View 1 (spheres, rainbow, N blue to C red):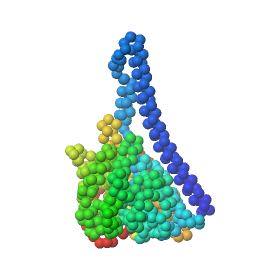
View 2: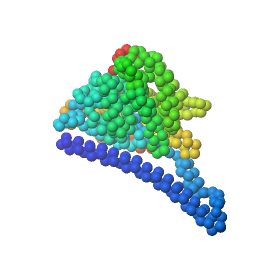
View 3: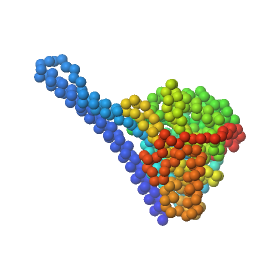
View 4: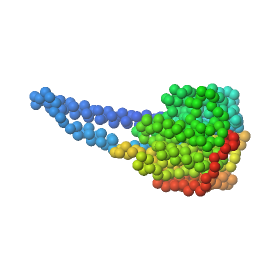
Length: 464
């Protein structure tokens, strides 16, 4: 029975992966057809002009305005381009999750944990998340080393993940060898490993991850506050992008040069949108610290459009604001923490999560790109118990509520919705039953953050 369920899950994932690939293939075909039509029109005009010149006896070509080509090019250029991005929080694998995923043949299958929300992950053009752990190889383990089987990377890639942030608490938990193997494993699955690097040359080449979809170019940079109070080995300063110079002690001295240099490198790619994925703040703290706010301001003033935060393991405030950069006003967005996407944690609020969805629209005439839609779908990590076939499942709260759950589960899910609304301090939640296109407009959802908490300086601030 269990084998049949796993087989169905794998077939579902494969079908959705193929559907997403087909959609991408069709987009490329449409782009090629448009280009082909334009070239054909241009060739026809040249042919007509050549024949006209031959009949009149003129050997010199006469200037003719290619009105049809100009009209086609104007129409194509004036069309707005849209791209969607889905983001999730921490992806962690504890020992209990390893036991849940382990199969009778010794392999590991993580798909059942993600299957209930696979449709949400594959619906967007791009999907990103924070890999809080490593692919360091055997022996696999949960806390404190967090070395997950490579099959997790395969599953995430199949679910449509494009970028995994690898700059976080556990980047060097298993040494530079673990970092190297993690980066290579992520890249071998076709995803970008964001914020960690194999060498100085690799950092130069991969400081910025660029993904272009539907004519919208999005650049990603990644940073972490520290590496579990450890220090990078001598000669390995290239390995991890760090927010602080005192990253192994107090997290007070912001490395502004490192941050602005990364942003300038991203801007040199001439993207339409810059997204910064940052591992920051303190565990289990709802409110952003003064230091986080300073970093956010620094990033926005230097050109970042979106900040996606992680580390606290709790979904935190989401804020859309207007900033003026180089004399021009634009909207930017920060999610201070997206909580845990998959984890075996049991502390308050750590099982509540969200898939954040952003839509970007590029004006076909001006070329300017704006955040045109923001919403999130409430999630809950369900622990179905040790004896369950699939113990851990990430569930869409709305879908689970509509399945006539028990009163206890119904209360838990309703509380999750209320907690997320309170903790995000926003009305960005997608209404139950609404499609992505009908989600909350980017014009709404301003936050009302009430208090500021200081940056934690103890060693406990880093642990996952």
